[in-house]
Amino acid sequence: MGQVKLEKPEDPQVFCSHTEMRDPASLVEHPRNYNTHPAEQIRLLAKIIRYQGWRNPITVSKRSGYVVKGHGRLAAALQLGCSEVPVDVQEYKDEASEYADMIADNRIAELAEADQDALKGLLTDDVFEGFDLDLTGFDDSMIGVFDIDETIPPELADGDRDPFQQITFILHDSQFENVKRAMEIAKKSNQIKNDVNENTNGNAINWVCSKVIESYG
Image 1 (tube, rainbow, N blue to C red):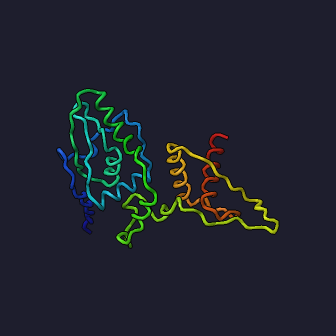
Image 2 (spheres, rainbow, N blue to C red):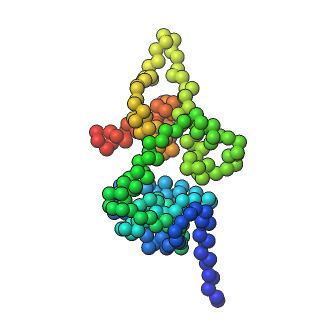
């Protein structure tokens, strides 16, 4: 009985400018890269690259040979089993310039501020009807994460809202991004349902606080 030969999936198409094509297994991550890449991020990135092809190369330093930009893309390529990836080999005049470019690539993206209303409007546009929103980096559960919750605590005869507590607090812009991200993670965890409270924002905050207490309490 003859052996069945399994064909290897074709590599994603390359649309971006690049210096050369290399085996991803031959690329070396920068030992000073401080960014970590969770499994869910790499899963999404691999899915996007498989669908979109390569829109950005992996940047490699000519002076050190290390990957400077594109560590997540490299991990996604390895997960996809790519035989070759587009590489942009760049010159850096010294070690400080190389480190600075790597840090800035991460940091500058963090400084962007998303207009939540504009983002929601874009993600709910008719053009995305039937489209896999994973390919945007978002999904259906993340649309409206910060919509105002219409759940109103039950009104008792005497007007008391017990056992519910309504809390308002003020955040600086730099703190808001952390809270927003924590709320998104909590709501995506599918662990925030609560039999005594239908308010999803309240349940998300409670879940985040419980994790802090578990770790540091």
